[in-house]
Length: 235
Length: 251
Image (cartoon, rainbow over all chains, first blue to last red; front, side, top):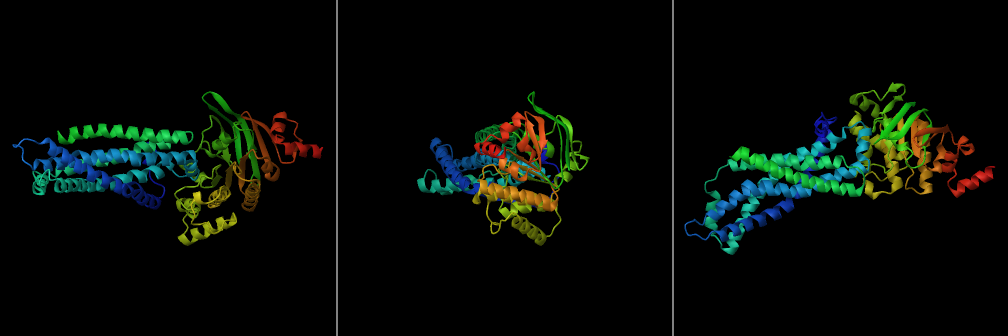
């Protein structure tokens, strides 16, 4: 029912555009720093772990780069980043909308004859669907770069082998697969916490509880959808 | 004029409003008073359509609001201004953006006309030089005045004020009451104020509805309320020591 209200025709498109730009900045660009830090370290750790688990002389050294690339593109960047954003952005959305509910800001919108569900939630969903693919592609680059840095610093694999590995047998469908997942996850990360925030009743405690429920539910749904999409797209 | 006819509302089997009928007149400050939990906020929310009544009708100048579709209600709501208890200003917007918001949504004014209207409304509530501040950066009394400025931005025919003086000092409360009364008379608005502040009752109560346990228990004005013989109303009106002393002096 909430989604039916959310996707009704907007009352003033120009105001929605302004809100979408605000949300792109708030939800997307505001997550840029944390995604960069997490990605570089995860790329480094994946490279170290892969190198430390390859002790057979029959397995070529470039396998480290190959494995790091595949792990980062197929799973780490789209899914783990989505789970991190579900925590950061999801709690932000649920608490923001929940506070708007308990402080009667949503009632104020309704009194003004504005479809509050649409005005508040649509810009967040559109902003996330637009900006999250960029964040995920950035995460892929930075993750692979993190692996290169650790290869250079630790010497677990030569940088030449690492670079050869990340280019070896590259299939661009992996990127499309990751971006398709990202679009689904962006919707989940914004829509589910919005639902919990929008229907909050009570005060600060209930807003906190809604935030927790929003994060937990969206994380679980991300994992389930990840499985279903992988089954459909890769198998 | 706003008319309520036989409004009833229950929550989880408990009757909160019981067959309330009353009319609120244009150009007057109409007050709904009652103890906490008496049903006055629910009655107001039923009137503006934030809560659907189980039974009864709400008429705005003879037009049945209860039977309207969502789109039809939107039209009426552009004629309604509401001041909420906590101000309900949008945190992410400045004072100016808050007041301009209903104009952006519903008017066809140019940018210059909107700026002029925003400044006029802020001047009208005696607020100047705060256009670029955020709600968190101004006092509670100023937030209430911004709330009033936003409520009158679209020149409403109906103004609702939910406990406009809660959390304010007595001096600021008087300013807010005077402002509501002035605006009501100046623009001939049908104003409904929900309150349990006896200062407001005695200052601006041109028509007063007293709700007790969800019933229309008494109707009158700021003069007749001091002479009431109804015990439940006396308990509310003369609850404070000051009011009891006033009553003695009057006698």
